Image (cartoon, rainbow, N blue to C red; front, top):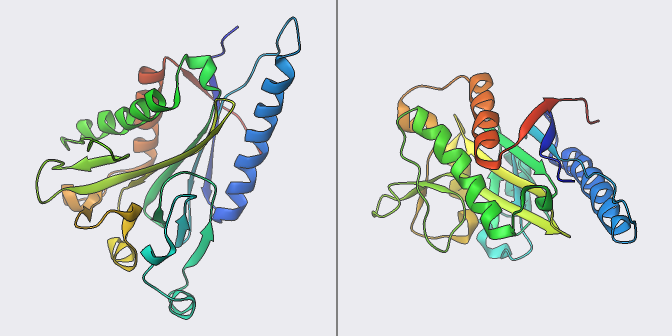
Length: 237
């Protein structure tokens, strides 16, 4: 029986490694249940989870990333109070920090009849739909993940980065939407390994900062619409 309910929690501002540990616990529990279900006549219901958070300054490098896309050395990062970690998501290097809305869906894709590519396109559509509320035209670039502004021009700039890990059709990691992010931190990396394209934020595009509480509600609503899901608030840690 497919379960399209999603339990969610807003963790507020949290250290990246702490949230990574929370994600990993939920991810492994869900994955192990799916493994067990292969041998049961009546499979156990698999749950779905979603975490909102905001991280202090950090650069994260994905499995396929190149260390040379980080343009600061260890001492320079220490002076700027920026953390750095290797992580197990796909993709290259990105920045997380204050002013971003970070969303981590830990879901069973089988519950939504999705494969990884269709999942990524739906996740992008969630952000595109939310941006449209603010008259910002979010777009895709073929061969790249995430959501862009002016995608087909020389002024193409990314407003939302995405990177995920999947195993047995269970997901972790997710998206980072730049709301009023300090964009200068992106100048110390080659974001997502993509050269000659910029980075932007909702604040830069709009000239004002949208209310993050309202934005999170709009993200959940767009997720429900695109995934056919229903969210329920629950303490997950």
